[in-house]
Image 1 (cartoon, rainbow, N blue to C red):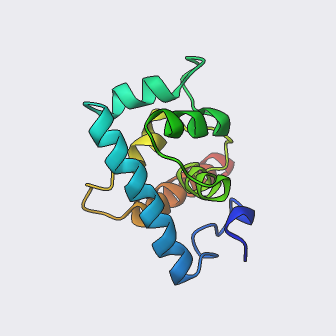
Image 2 (cartoon, helix red, strand yellow):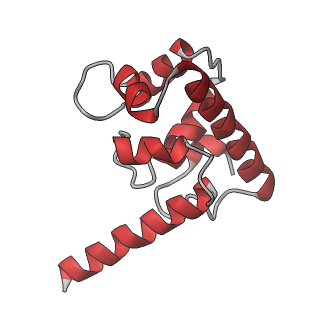
Length: 128
C-alpha cells in the first residue's frame, strides 16, 4: 500500500510496521523543528494558518513546514498531514495540530486511534 493512498477508514491499520516507524520519524522531525522555532504550539499553529481561518490546509501545512526549515518530500508531507487529519476533514484544527507534540506519553498513533473511536461513538449516539 502506498503511504499517500491512505483512506480515512482504517488509516492506521493499513500502515505496515515500517511505514508506522517512518511516519513517526517524520512527525518527530516536525515536532523538533516546531519546538526549536516557536515557544508553544499555539504560536506555531497561528503561523501555519496563513489565511487565519482557524484550520490548516495541506498547502498551508507544507508552507509552514518549509518556514520552519522542514524540507520534506511531498509524499512525507502528505503522510504526516493525512495522519494528523484523522477524520479526513481535509484540514487540521488546533486540536489535531497538537498531535504533532510527540512529547506526550502516548504515541501519536494511540492518540489518533482514541480520537477516531470517540468520533465514531459520537456518530453512533447521534444516529440513534
